[in-house]
Length: 212
Image (cartoon, rainbow, N blue to C red; front, side, top):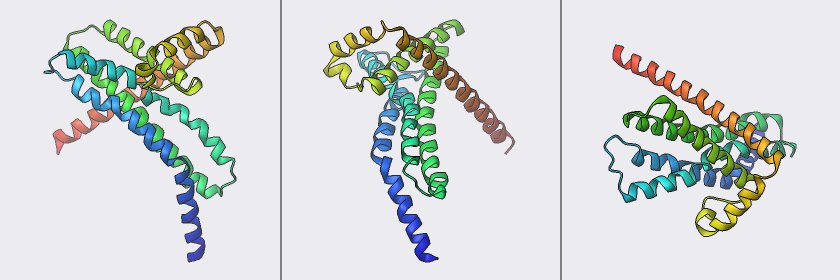
């Protein structure tokens, strides 16, 4: 029995190690815009030159957070390796669920901070919606370029002309435009659902704190 358990845990560790490097790196990239949002979107922040540079970096790295949603394409490939069902259910799938939730929550929390900052600046709901639409559009294109053209955020600095030229070429193809439109709707819809969940959770915690 102990030998079977030992073999199971060895296999579980092997499965976890299959994606560890990619997961750790992609989570690191997803956390960069969240960290920047903690500095950028404060009520008392001074919008100096450093702030504007930080905003550019924030926007450049922001697509890395929702990009994590597309990493689930690796899951069927790993499942197809005929691991025991218990490994798939108890190790592989939970690993990817936690990975996706962490990365996407980084995206949502960063945008919630942006929304709060815009409200502090007394922007109207319409203006906030427009800003969100622009952000989601840029991130949708960024996800596409990262997944299918294999560009990354660094390429905007090291190869900006290539990235811009390739983006314009791809956006002339109707199938690409349709795919981006669908992805845009899905991304915005998921973001709003998670925002509502987070706001509800904050309200519950706030109410609980008042009664404790």
